[in-house]
Image (tube, rainbow, N blue to C red; front, side, top):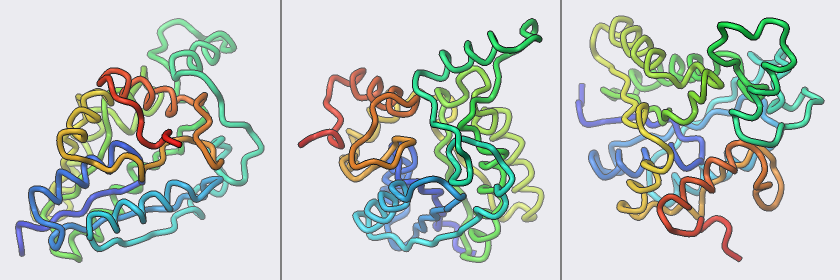
Length: 240
């Protein structure tokens, strides 16, 4: 097996695009695959962004559609949901959830309405199967500390990543491993790394809405804005 091939889960956002840049820098574009997954989301902007990013780096891109698995979910990101995508930070959303709950004490926070049920576990399992078939030795996953956000996304935590890595290593006889180099980093840290690598952030899409321009009000827009502000640079995706 070629130990210099990698598969990167590529959503078209800031985190996975930075990770793709790192993988290309380390392995060379010819040895990197980008996997982009549709999951029944309300818009295609992130998949379009993923296409643009993969084309920019000249990597081979693969696609999967796993939307049928989430057909019964009420997650506000999904096309079948009539719920609006919430505005405000994850902390604000969790405070509202807690206030509406009769059982507030002892809670470490709740998953938010944009949490797609065990999505990242599913994505990583599919990615592991594909990566092994492509003779890769590593799957890269762009989870970062800010996404854990008081358990807003439990499938982004360090404990989750460690558990999934153990499963992947065990389930592939040690031929494949999972790496999530940002799992303890902030989004500001990721942007800092990406700026050093010259990542084309103007090609990326983070907003949960699918409009012509980012809404600027959903949690991921707010996190992205804060990350660029922390690095004292304007978000290139907002130019023009």
